[in-house]
Length: 103
Length: 159
Image (cartoon, rainbow over all chains, first blue to last red):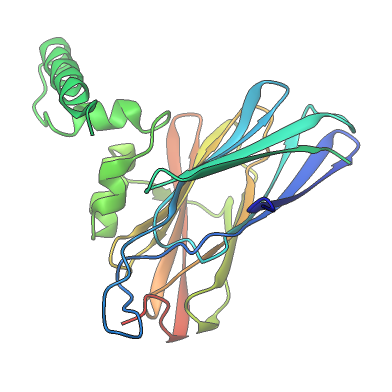
């Protein structure tokens, strides 16, 4: 199955810019489905970015993060070709991991 | 949820130790602060009120600062997807959090910033209705904030 994580990490001299899109419903637990039944909360709680064995950016999310979340940040100290590992876990125990090369 | 009893016990012990050391009350909150920067802030995400959530996450109130630049649309047609970004010129930033005051729970997202990571984040949040959005930047142990109102035409919390 294709990964839920799509990432673009581009190095611009010393600074690496990371843009990430994750496929996830991010259900709040407030929405009802067509039959009028509440869709239980289902959301990513933690999203981590690690580069060269170090966590560079950690996101703690609640249900207020939009469906199919997008996040952008930048960090220093990585070079072209370095590995960037992205991993998330959600409130139902689901998770996914992807390692991308910095371009 | 098998680790629960142990964790609770540890929290109680930590709390007791804090009280013993500092002679302060406020027992249930003391351990939460210590954990704010390295663990998922479960409690803070559950609180409805913005001030309570800020207190649970950081243990104190921020001061407004023009060094925190919050970028949010004035009008959001779809409250389900509102692009919000923040940048700051402050040094030694360790965390950035976003609060949406009128949401069922105010804390939307909290980001831990490592050394060498730039204090600049863009993400997309849901908003139930027209609301103030606050970004809090923790820099060198102090809290700074910026707030902006977003007018929401169609709420993003369903219902």
